[in-house]
Image 1 (spheres, rainbow, N blue to C red):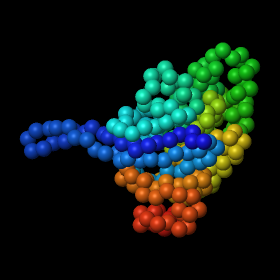
Image 2: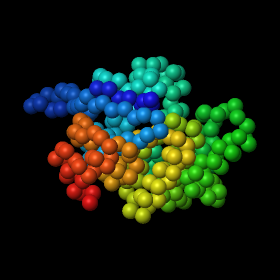
Image 3: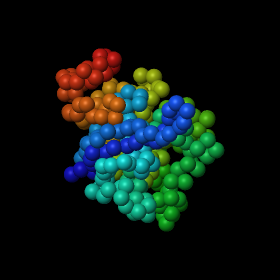
Image 4: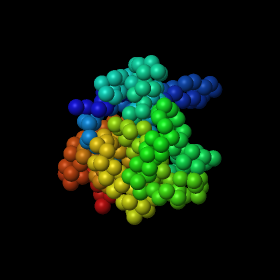
Length: 260
């Protein structure tokens, strides 16, 4: 059964352009009729270089980017056509983690305070003991020692910050986890540590995972299937082993050669 389905999605960007002696607005196509779906408990990697449309696509799935046409369905509900209140009910089931460079953790909050913010939002009626149990569960799953709870983001290294971001995302017990550039900027050893952690958590928590990355090796590692995105269009889609070992499109072949 499909958990998330994107159908004929078009995303635009309004930008100001100068033409001779006057300015005018024009539309740039960021994502052009993209379609894909991810079944429950499976993983899909969307692989593309910078400016391929990855970020606006991710933001659209979080309802943070308006769509021009097409649909995004989560649990068979079109998330861009429902009310803000209805989407809020669905939003707990969709969580995302981004690169450390995005500054996704609030600098002025300790790790524990960041966790409590999430719990106050989604589980305000639970007891403090239940909150503690939830925090303990995700910290163990993400490999975080208890001592880190009272530290600020700047006191952590890059891998620890990403582990904290992942733990915070898991606090709401999501069905869909979006990993957008999650290991970007890390060395090979650090990437492997985090990728293996995500794979283990996916299995233990029966998560559906959508990986959005510019690194084909990362997509191959985490994705059951791979979609190759280039200039807003999906050029190739298939089983990850097939896409990596027998790429059909010239662009995919270039990605494969760069990842070897």
